[in-house]
Image (tube, rainbow, N blue to C red; front, side, top):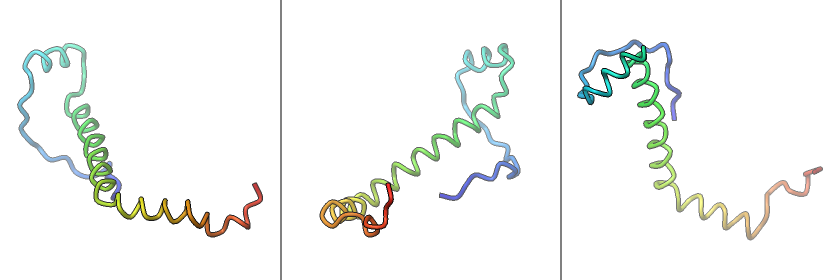
Amino acid sequence: MPRFDKDAPKKATNLSLNSKVLEMARELGMNVSQTVDGLLAAEVKRLYWERWNEENKDAVAAYNARIAKEGLPLARYRSF
């Protein structure tokens, strides 16, 4: 997954938020844009890896089965 560019330009967008939650966030001095941006980035990352795991589950299972059967390829060189 490409890393998020923290210096990427911001893009204005419209969101529909619960008015009471928004009011409380403002009263608490929260930076709503920064908070939403961080939470959205975390959710994008989570969903990306969830999808990746689903799309690659067969390959991961095959690799794990091969390692279980044959062992690690360079295990004989391990000193620990």
